[in-house]
Structures are given as structure tokens and as C-alpha cells.
Image (cartoon, rainbow, N blue to C red; front, side, top):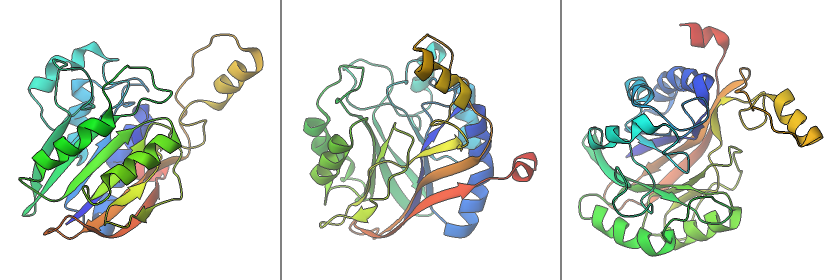
Amino acid sequence: MKLIFLGDVVGEPGRDTIRAAIPLLREKYKPDFFVVNGENAAGGNGITPRLAVDLMRAGADVITLGDHAWDQREIMPYFATEPRLIRPLNFPAGTPGYGSVIVEGNGFKLGVINMLGRTFMGPQVDNPFLLIEPEIEKLRRETPCIMVDFHCEATSEKIAFGRACDGLATLVVGTHTHVQTADDCILPNGTAYLTDAGFSGPHESVIGRDIPSVLQKYRTLLPNKFYIAREGLQADGIFVEADPATGRALRFERIQQKITPEQIDK
């Protein structure tokens, strides 16, 4: 079983990047599943039903979210109609949507879980370390192949969470900080791990935002709008191949797929 996870989609340039990158990555890696973090798809703040549909039409089998899940209010009723759009599992009970899903493709099943970290994060969510094992156990009744998107700020919390899931999940990958880390590995008990996948969108930027507007904020400390950047399109993520019988990761490769303007215009 082969899967590709692509990091946070930032605004319209990020959506263009995903549309161009998925066919290229499909040809190169022949994955069975694409999972995409879409929590910044709507101008850097949340996602709308239309944009979720666009990402799925582009090839995303599952869309995960994060702390910006509720930024676009129109998304709330959409969760009831689209189980492949998931929000962090550890939001309070009764919150719209679900925190996990199982999808099928090419004769395989993949379980996907979305979790939100707590260190330096805004929402006061339930403890992900206490919720993850029961959720994995539930999904493993149908498939041993399970990936977790851990949307989190602190590197230490991400690493600890990866260790907590070692031997339980196929892949634990961090999102939220938009800077791809170089610590990809297979942990001792067979879980592929990457502290942060990076992001999909304009890399001639400050984590996806227009450089002058960010510099103005740091220089003056005055409030201003951080515009979405436009240049240097690239899709960041990770490819993992796993044993479909056990869910153990066999090999992995970080992805930094550059996209040219010509590829966007096709």
C-alpha cells in the first residue's frame, strides 16, 4: 500500500499547486491514496465546501484540517455530507464532523486520523495522547494501515506523539508550522515519522505569506494584513509504502515537488 500526504494548502496558489502536483506525483510514485491538509485553503484561513470539492476533484482522497477548521462558517453543515473531510478528533464532543475516516482504493483500506496539539495552540482541546490509542484500535478492526496528521506547533510535542504511536500507526506526520523538517525516519516499531510535512503553495514567502507585509509587522509591531504570496510554488509532503498486512512502513521519501507557471496554466 502506497500513500502520499501533502502539507497545508495555502490559499489559491496552494490549490493551484495541488492541482498541478498530484498528476506528477501520481505518475512518479503510483500511490493508492492522497491525503491533503486543507485548513489554510480559503485565503489562508479555513476551507469552504466548494474548495473541499475542488481539492477532492484534484485527487485528494481525504482532507484533514487543524486549528482553523471553523474559520469559514459555511463549512460546518458540510461535514454531515462529506465524511472524507475530517477535523481534529480531540475537539469537544458534539462538534460538527468526525476526526477519522476509512477510505478504500485499489483493493486497500486506509484509516486517517486528524489530531490537534495543545502546546502553544489556541483551542483548548482534549488530550491527544489519551485519545489516539482507542481511535487507532477502532480503525485497526478494519485496516492495519493508518496515518495520523498531528496539527501542532511544538516540535517536542510532535516527536513525543510520534513515539506514542510507534507500532500503532503506519505514518505520523506533523503539520501547522509550514516548514518541512529533515527528520523523516521509520521508528523502531515500524511507524514512519516526519515532524512537519511543510506546505503546498508559494515558497517565495514567509510560510506562505507576502514577504513585505510580514516584514512590516516585525519592523513596526503595528497591525496589518498578511497577504498570500504568489511565487515559488511547491508541494511539500511525504511518500510512504507500507506492508498492507501489518501496516508497518517499509520505505519513505520526503516530497518537495516544484511547480512552474506553465504547469499551472495547463
